[in-house]
Image (tube, rainbow, N blue to C red):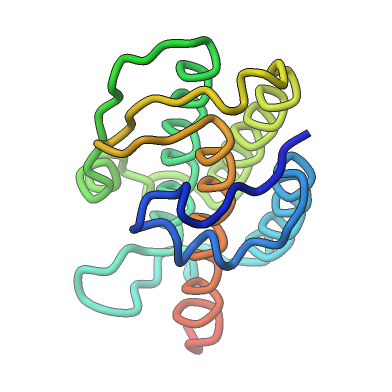
Length: 174
């Protein structure tokens, strides 16, 4: 069973995300979030999916693609660290990933299916980990992190973006 680590265990830049999270087992939180996010975004039209609320800002489809890409990377980090690999893991340029991904060529239905598949794989990975591996540590993007902290970072990161989606995309009259 997972237990949310103390705030100081998280990299500084993620602490705002982590504060958004409820207490509880992260696999339950991620499963609940899967349903909530899917329900919210499955109602998005293709016009809304291509909306930008400002110059240089991502479209809603790019935000969803970013969430999915980031979760893939974080799950990979979880796997490596859980298996005892202490090789420092590099960061990634999220803007470059979005730019090169061409999410605009995919429908929201397709992007949502991809998101669901990745989330289910993350939950499956987490549920299959031995309890003793949850506290394994390594460096990722220059920060000391554990399997547990990365799992909670996935959910907190999504909550951060969902807040922006609700404020800037879905309530903007787009």
